[in-house]
Length: 127
View 1 (cartoon, rainbow, N blue to C red):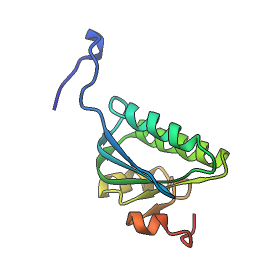
View 2 (cartoon, helix red, strand yellow):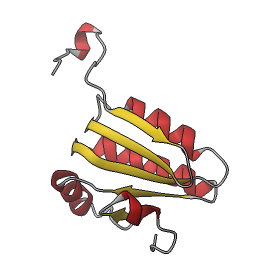
View 3 (cartoon, one colour):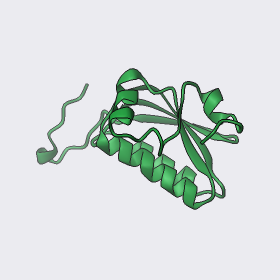
């Protein structure tokens, strides 16, 4: 882990990592921590993918151990942009701590959550 002091003007190196799998739906795989100082790559990716025509996005969170309110905001921004384009965003495989944050903040309704990517990608699954 790299510790960085924002007051010194250095950049955060321990950013969340993102992989995108083309298809329908698009699968965005996130690993690392989804937090205020690490989430920029996720934000940029989700907003780009969600800006396409009728985006259907599954965000695989199975490799994300921690998520703070900034991370939740990133996911909500992606979901809103996808909905504005006539599509959707669903979450798959959140780890226990991430699921707890989603539950405590009452966001499970706004961010449909599934145990696996396959379940989230299933068109017959309720959003």
